[in-house]
Length: 543
Image (cartoon, rainbow, N blue to C red; front, side, top):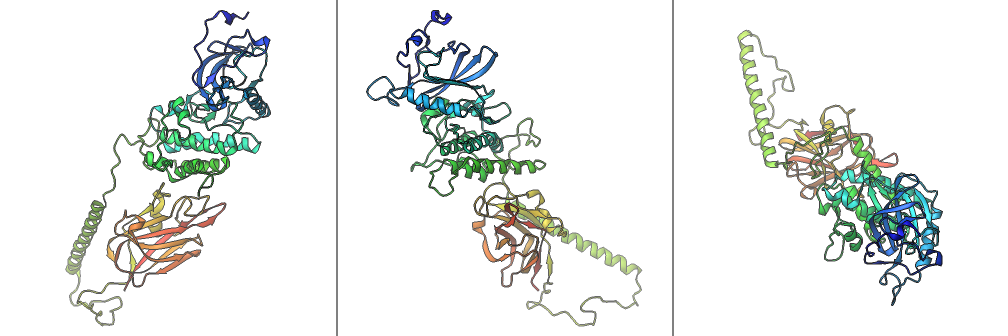
């Protein structure tokens, strides 16, 4: 008799999983599987951490008594009547289902990936030392860290941290699908988050009816949960995992992450919705490789911009963040105050120039000979008077218009290379601003990207020129009522397709404007993606 036979019986099993009936004679005397029970004379069960009722599986943290290390054990039980047998307490197909799941686990035994715990042992139905109420078991590495519920219990993760967390899990799913396996990451208690913030599969033996598309939905669900703290798939699984279920509209549609919390980039919003949406819906993400590629691009772009302050994403800075907000709230821009400031600065500059000019004339007159004739240089040197304006005022002089301010405008997501946009008005075409490189052409991830140029006061323009090496870029020229106006509030003046070099765009007949938006609607091909680069933008006043 085993030493466990004298121990008191463990608590009854949770609803949904029931013990199997008596098996072969050599298993009749085996104690039931519970805390302290031994599997195959080696693995001692310690703490049950979850269950997958549809698979008839329980998830345990156990100890390998031979190597003295923690392991993760997935136990297969019979299904409760509502999931298995009808009209009785037994699960007549339990042994067949368990056998199929064990065979699949054995076939995937050689699969190893950093995003998935390594399979260490498989206990087939009827194996010696298997408790009488267990159909089979699989032993994997124990993933140190936290469950999904624990990872989001302390508050929202930064969107980029959530993307980084799912990258290794998506890579593991991509590799598994390439070898014909399914991970089963569509259950919240099968995934754990490591201390360095990586999501990793911990428990084996997924349901035999799962397809690769279920893993894609699982990847979208894990990303959705890390972004919103809500599980978007089964409400019953969410409750067992200690997570609230995701909110849905009256029509049953899932609310996107950006509607639940602020600061979610468009790319993450799109990939989460695409992975979780119906397979025939527009924008649906069909493969784990697509999820992995998009998340990898988002993380890579964030790393390229690591030297610059990130856009505010609604989450206070962490103590170890390079860029600290010191707890100060981010105030929204005040367009009226900014416009008044620009007008005040322009007026002050004009007054200073007038004073300096007057002082210069007075100083010159003290040292000049009044008998010396005045030398006039310019178009009126011959003595002809300049043509008066129609209303008697001085006629405006055709020529370049100085831009007072320039910024990047986007409808959603981050503003592409915002810190470099001033290069388009620095007078040096060799110093350029560019969009980020997108894997898909606009408007797949963004409806467009714009450069907003603001003048000190309203001006009548005759033309503008754009110096760019990105031939094929399509640009709409729009007048805007303010520097922070949305694209819907602007009016189209004209559009143009850029050539390599300088492209001149005529603006004859346009009304005086104070703000001009150059709205890019189509990017130029760039390697295996799409991006556009601008070296200089110049505006010319109408004569």
